[in-house]
Image (cartoon, rainbow over all chains, first blue to last red; front, side, top):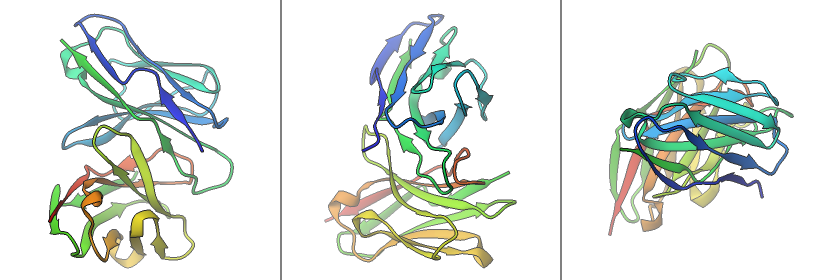
Amino acid sequence: DVKVTQSSRYLVKRTGEKVFLECVQDMDHENMFWYRQDPGLGLRLIYFSYDVKMKEKGDIPEGYSVSREKKERFSLILESASTNQTSMYLCASTSMQGVGNTIYFGEGSWLTVV
Amino acid sequence: AQSVTQLGSHVSVSEGALVLLRCNYSSSVPPYLFWYVQYPNQGLQLLLKYTSAATLVKGINGFEAEFKKSETSFHLTKPSAHMRDAAEYFCAVSASGYSTLTFGKGTMLLVSP
């Protein structure tokens, strides 16, 4: 089974802190994604990556950055956390081989910024 | 560009009743369509997907969906609801099989005894 692991399930951080959310997948997937989920807004794409050291902005990249130094790991970085970044963050991955591939999600990281 | 509209943020059914969750999409290219389910405090799990093969797609847990190009719809159905089906359901579209997913805002399914 594909496993997408988000290292932190629940975090509480202070305004202005630098926050790292880590994600690891074990299926050698080329594509990895970070989404943010908020009630009534569904999931919105923050950043995605098609390969190591490559990144593309999604729909809401402001206030975030990402790092992909290894194929299996994709990190989301909040340079200076703000209260409006309190949310659930979901990491996902999928293969580029073939079409119609399932995108697999991690369990989510609940971030509260106080 | 793609977009997804899910009609109804909440749907309530009785146990044993038909479940119908509505999804309409917009896409400039032939779409790939997905339904995901999210149980409380968990990530998203794939229920089913349409990848341009059969228009009626069967998924896990007794769910199915029908792709109707003329109506730009991909509604999710289940003949008989169970209490364990209570969860949030998301419809999503992508322009190709491995590109980014665009999600609807979700529909919370409530199942009463």
